[in-house]
Image (tube, rainbow over all chains, first blue to last red; front, side, top):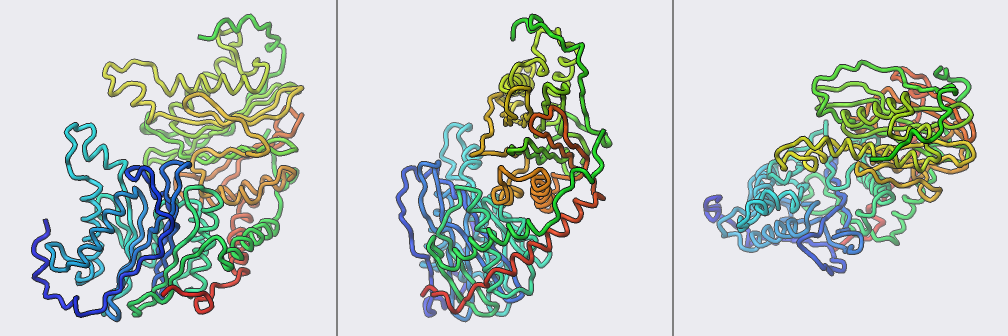
Length: 293
Length: 293
């Protein structure tokens, strides 16, 4: 579709290209076409840069739960960093990631590589087009009732794309299955995908664009802890990435497992702190309030 | 379907039958068939009895928001109290409520009245059958593609039924659109319907079966406050009902409007208490944690 990206004179092969995949968990998978990344991912824009967190649970039903990474990152030191998080059908998201990787390895291919795109806006557009093509499917279904529309609804996915290219601002995008996308601003400074509701109230209350990375990571951990407590389809370990403005590399990245000391202290501490917060509020007065007839 | 309920010798007409509807809000409604009760209702079982809360917002799109009650209660003083909360399609839930009311007024009708059912289990069964019939529709659709199944998916609803009949325990049921239902126990002591996720984490953490009504109402208000803050489809005023064990009447009922002093103090206090709780947790240490390669 997209015409000759080979014409972008590329000095990419001369650079050190860091492609970072987080250490994989057990990748057993009985019915890959139906696996859903029922997932929780958050990307957050701060004055200081970007903070991203994702879980790793995927399931084809509660009896078939696996661990898959949902955070992928590419960077060209000193020039750009691009991180992507995925939610939805696993076959769909893996296909998009694989295509992105293949294009990065063969930059002279007919599609532009996201490592060559001149702006983050164009990176988001390219990821969106790729996602839409995969969701729509190859169009091989002879029966219209089983065609792309019918399948598309089941094999759907959404993504968060975050990053920065030298000379421009850090940017954060939410990409819909249809391939279109929206960008975060300081009015709407974070995006969530997947199982977003349990962990949203604390994000709404705790977020502050001026907060440091240490506080932002804490906020994300509390949001994930609330989600983990309420929903089986989101599970440990978590992947964390911190991208400092103008760093063009991961300032910090980490896989947070169930035995992580800090996460455990947050999880336990938040439970206690919530209880204290709840107790600090005045109790309702059945007698004092005016009862209905 | 159900055979001669008229044979249940009824002394119902001799009793004082209290039917309580909460004061109605503005009931303007431009397209009633499509109105959705996108709603938040919680029913909670305590050692002391039952506490119920519902919002009142209904919408056919964000440009058409109205206020409708979603909590309905019937009681026979000293003998039984039955309270019902609804979520889903407004035409469906109003039809079920109207049919329940009509049967209560004409107890000799062919269907058993929920005020005559010998147990809460049978009350739940009767409400479930009625809900299922309404969701399935009248079967008037000539085109199968527009038939009950297709419509049913859009005109769906679920309900919470709570109450107590003299000589038996207080009971709490969640009724699915298909008409089947589950009952709360002290393993699963509360049910939520509608927009359930935002307010679930605090319920999971704050619930204690031994808590008093005053604390339970506070917990529900915090859960509703978190939901209201995150989602437009849930709105004030709220309806609250407290049913004491063996009371067979509302111990306390109230409509909580936006200017309610206690709700405002909870809303503001919770926001501040959460912030303090969050600040009381240790910040993440980017340097101290072992970073990935």
